[in-house]
Amino acid sequence: MSAIRLSRKSNLVYCVRKFGVFIDGQKIGSIGNGQTETFQVAPGRHRMFMKVSWCKSKEFEFDIASGDTKEMECGTPLGLWYVALVTILVCSVMFTHGLIKFGVSMITFVLGIIATIATFQPDRYVYLKERTDIRTI
Picture 1 (cartoon, rainbow, N blue to C red):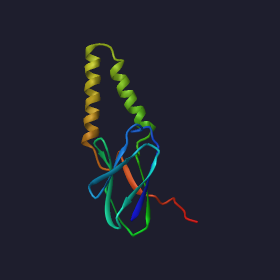
Picture 2 (picture 1 turned 30 degrees about the horizontal axis):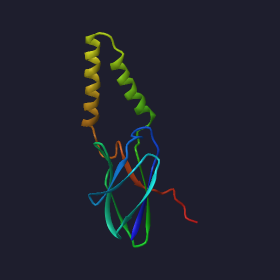
Picture 3 (picture 1 turned 60 degrees about the horizontal axis):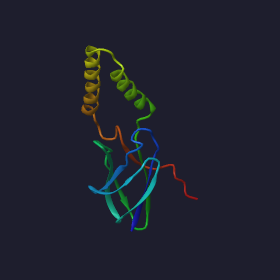
Picture 4 (picture 1 turned 45 degrees about the vertical axis):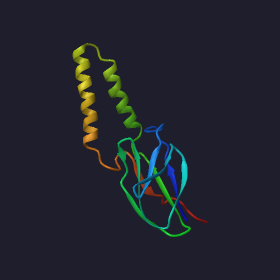
């Protein structure tokens, strides 16, 4: 058997959600924020991707030989700016006064969500890549 050692970068975005780990279209497990997990795979050619909610990484295709371990990394490229933007949008909706301002804020908030979903591209919200910073001694 061969193995994939997958490390997930710690991040505030999706910090309470586990990412689903898919190999060859089948879910083989999940990984939490800041965790490292090892998954057993058969030797050969595989396709792997990560998924959380409606967000999916690009598929990563790789070959692995018998007894080898492939080092992979996943996470979300969204940072503190994303959390701040969502917080500002939510607060603007919550703290507006009057029905007109509330209605305009709600419409703006909903349009922002629709624009985010409409411009969805794999790997924008969740990524998967091979780790290159591992050094063997």
